Length: 537
Image (cartoon, rainbow, N blue to C red):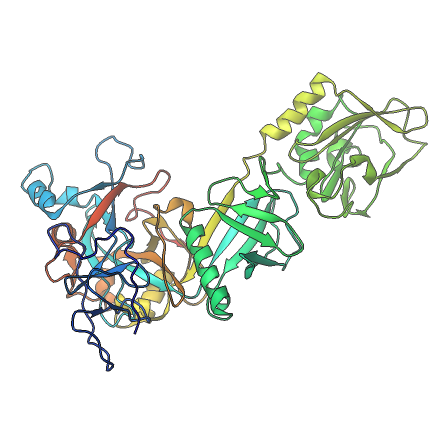
């Protein structure tokens, strides 16, 4: 038997549900083994905790309140501002009880249209795992006069991961290198993208395919990332990192500041006209190194060839690969001295007094030189006009951030909470008849088979994610569609509730006990969930 005694602020004995108490869930029949009469068995995940009065289950999400299984956290509702107010304006979370809703119902100002300003999210909604019964909330509302249905649940995801985009030109580690958290492998380094390093973290093989410790640490790491908390990571053969959604990454103890404006060739192309007349040669030191005078931009400006020869593998004119090894120095290389990439100068082309600028693609590293009579670069103070161009490079670099995207397979029995014929839901999503959101935030649905969704956690409400000890991640998911389409795909019509009824009484299987809830405004930058088009691959 499984019992968890952590209370997280709950009193030793929970009172019987009041008007504002968490909603009551169906209680499954006890298993064949003996269970004390005052315990309740939670069927919200495969662990099947047997919970004593006043205690919570192993996930800290469900509790035994006077013999009733209750959801500890309130369900989150999004509210759309009315009139000329900004619907995305930030607002502090507020709570209201069923009594307050009843009072409002008597007000002419809070009519049925006003009720459609609420959207039920999956956060705190509970689950019906393994979905042998309809989803906790199947809500009828209107959007621009169209009858809509939103099916709401908390999904239990074993097949899920996080993709982390780290804006830096610093070298973090070799591609495919293991990423560790508290010593356990929790992911790997993926392919670098333009100006960013990418990590693939979590996934079913780390959650359930390794040791129990690996699964537990992977799950805890994923929970923290999804809830926008800082996570310390170490890359085999590479850097030590601290990443947090929406915050600058910390690489080897140093907080990153800028994302590069582009590769070396792009930087040359962008700023060639501004370099013109101030420098006779510009080498932008990066893993794709740009050289101004042989570059197409320099040739278009009819610049005199400098005769500089750069180490590395020559690409197209003005572009050189592999000038140095990856590192945390100049331009994401292991260089401390930028002149190390210069092999020689062609004496038939170079001249004494030639002005040379070395600058990184973030503008954070720069140095100015003049060739002496022996064609050896000598450091000089950078002219003020050239300083302004270097500053312009930095101005065009966006702030370095860590972006965290949740990627999950919303298949399996989760779909049975929506319809008796799950494949119809999958097809309807691919036909753009169903919009998928996660906590009200827009979710991108990947092409191909199944329902593979991806969402930026920064656009989701706070504390959107939970866990169960199988281990697995719990994430909110909502399916919104026209009422006629829901009926056509064989949706569960019997438990459909109007938004007004949900606001007054809670989930369909709450046995009459109102649902505890909190209300937030739609996050800035997100459109109203019932008004956004599906994001399909």
